[in-house]
Amino acid sequence: MAKSLRSKWKQKMKAVKRVRYDAKATETLKKILAIQQIREQEEEAKKDAEMKVKANFSRISHQDKCSTKN
Image (cartoon, rainbow, N blue to C red; front, side, top):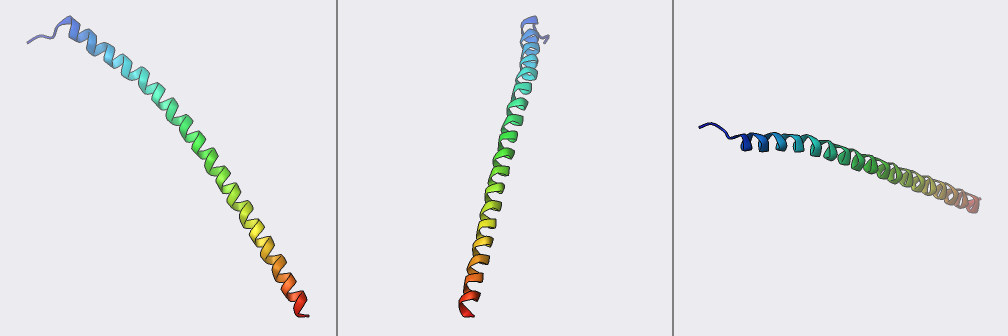
């Protein structure tokens, strides 16, 4: 059975829509990934800052303990 012109047109237009929406979806995913990378970098920076504070605090408290023993 032969396909009608109408069904061929619909099939063609669905393919066009798929291409257009695929480009939009790709852009959206790229934006989401960029935002996620920025958040991960911020979290890593916070963790680094916390570790520096903890290390500095432990060093200071260790110096205080040593000075009180003498």
